[in-house]
Image 1 (cartoon, rainbow, N blue to C red):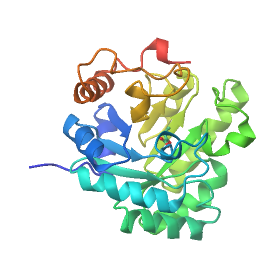
Image 2: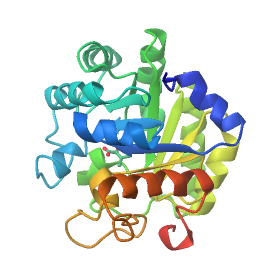
Image 3: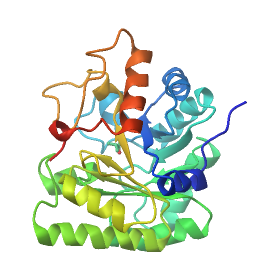
Image 4: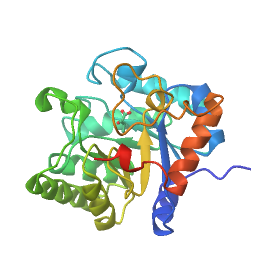
Length: 265
Ligand code: KIV
């Protein structure tokens, strides 16, 4: 008998001080492996454009791609909550966001959608929530803005930028977001945002003080191309097989031993 993870359950986990374990997957088999290992939320990330399709950025990922992979993941998952990314340019207006989110939910069986941005997305988040679509925000390093940013690097190191990020986080929460991902920011800021918000904050390169953690599956299996980012740990290095590596990740996030200081900024 499985107890599927729900949006209210994520919020209850934060209240109980339990860490939330999030990991990406893009197909049915890995979704089942993650589910069996006890991952709470499976993110069908637009990172699939990079790790599955081989593009240099997430920008070529389409709504069609997201629906297809979300549908595949839904075949394998029984317990984890499914969160799918709204890809680049799929949410230029609240109405377009709702149409594309509806496809992710109806055709891809996603239960929550994630979108990148802060105050510029507040109207969209509010509109989606009014249509009963659970939303996860995404702040800090925004991969869909890579051509504006110029490089994948740590964000909000300066006091002013950190203040803006905190304000954005509060605005997204106020607009009705149920979850927030923050990527590549100083650990102090990750902790500050997590304690300022009532909704759970999931970090990736945002230090151990967040309410949960997410990594890209291929990265934590040591399959990333090029130099491994500081915030990634290769869980395959000490595991006999993929299932054990994923179980080790789940345990490390739950007990708070990942991320350690060496994975933080
Ligand atoms: O697309 C993705 O995999 C993501 C994670 C990096 C959080 O958004």
